[in-house]
Image (cartoon, rainbow, N blue to C red):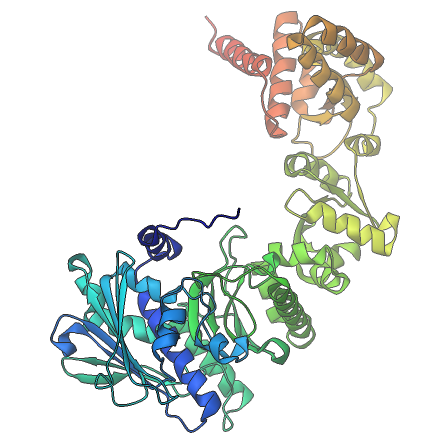
Length: 598
């Protein structure tokens, strides 16, 4: 036999009114929503119906209550029971059979938000169907009373009255009510007034601020939107992109931030639903790559969540996000074509977002190639400019590796690009996929070694004993020495990592801490590989290196070689292992002791 759930109504009201919404301030938004829906329902039957909402603060009523009155369609006794007193009822519009998109409310729980600030909610309503007026009083414990009182209200419409709790009196005072009404309802298509001790104030505006006026030029419209951005969002926009998508009933504007924004910064858009503010920090409206844009929009097609403080992630939102992304992409391409200097400035400021979308968009890839700056051995410049002097773009995917190799590559006339920052390597790979494999490729350090000159036989003979000592002392660091003749002369040594040797070193280190079974397997891998993990390339043009051949003291020669090794290691920006740190300290102290002498 089927059983019904037992529901603690007071607990449900507490759950919805205190945990569905993020702040008590939303109570006024929900009251405005109900009033606007009531006016909308009445206008569907009688378009000449005046749309008016009056909010009276506690200072105005004089009896400690907040009152909100509308000229909407009203409710009769049966509708009060079925709509106001049933959780999950969707609103007057469904009862009347009207389309959902004509109304703001959806969930039938908005009135419960009043219990965030009040323990008692009173309602008096007269329906447009000619029924007698009805009085409804709800309490925070989940009970309510209904009575027919034809003298309670003469005109069609509804009056809601809240009795604030003692700790919530400030939410019903004029200053707070006027501020909330202006924030949530300033763009509503009905007249909203707030009454205080000194009279009434109109809070609604005649038009949406981003809609272009008939007597306004494009430039004037742009300037007005920029002023709106300064006043509303608090920054001077780099540019303004008007937005209009009739298919989803969306209008608004996108404002480009003037300086580089952190890609991790949360998107915060100002969104209105049928001219009622949903929130000022709504996420998910734009693609992730457009983190440098802030939008203000009004829409009739997007769905809010039950709390009406964020947008529901559905197919409509996905379509809107794609459409807005396409609009911003087209704006970027047009800016590049018409104002290249401003495009360069914008791309330099927001290059990370542009690079991320260039990975999947060919036109923006070309845009990034022309304008996004890269660090190269010829200075900072766009890839297009670098490619004019180099048929193949050689790059390193690691910043530290670039900084180590750049001075040597520059001195040899080799063009090198630093692709160690976010998306750079992926962009170069994508460029090679479009323009051919020879367009860009990763350069191996061994290639750079091949471009360095070998010293003559006499120099090699002079350095033979030095190389023998160096081989012995560097073996403990999985490094082997090498002589080369290269510029710049000021660089005594270059430490070059070998990928295969580095894998062997890592395997050997893992073997030391593994159990016996894995030690045997890892030992075979170590034995299968050969070669040192790194090479210390000594520059025979450097005077200090040349003087190594004249050192007769074997201990001093060993110390000097180790000092050159740790110097080159520090220059490469690689992490120091414990043995490297010990070598650094030991060689430094030994050389210092010899310098001080007896």
